[in-house]
Amino acid sequence: AELHLEHLEAEALVVAGSVFVAGDVRVAGVLRVGGQLQAGAGIRAARLEAGGDIHSGGAIFCGGALRAGGTVKAAWSIETQGGIDCEKLRCGWGLECAGDLTLSGEGQIGQELLVHGDIHCAKSLRSGGALTAHGNVHARHGIDAGGDVHCGRHLQADWGIRARGAIVAAGAI
Image (cartoon, rainbow, N blue to C red; front, side, top):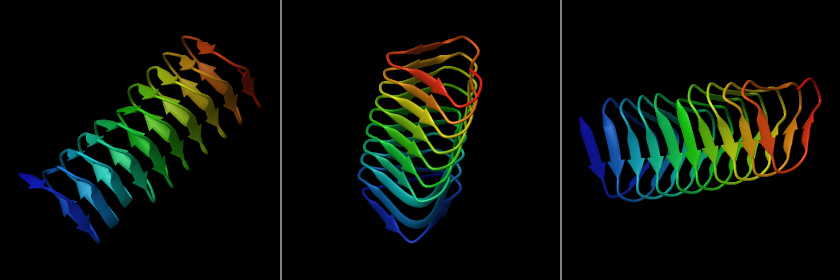
């Protein structure tokens, strides 16, 4: 089933199918979609989960964890107060994640990437600006950063690291 809306504002929403919103999405509590979630503007929710892709024509703000079975794509920035767990991640601006960032595919961030926990990326990880993680960083297909790379613990990039600034880790590289 598909739910098509002009605008979504609710206390909470759980839908087994997909949700398509022409405008913005504002949910004070949990927003759980079994299929994909697509918004023409920004998405704001206390907790956000989708069985498929999450696409936002604006920014994504999540007050907790953000989970998707597919790609998370935001035209602007992504900010979460919890971890992010998805297949692929793309955002046009910066990303700030208060927990761990776990990607079973690749990650591409247009500007700065800031993760307060660990980063686990099964493929390549690219940021247009600085890449900062307070925990461990492991990118199996390598790291490409447009600025400095700062790692609070160990830094591992199986296919190498390219940075347009300093590469610093508190542990092993």
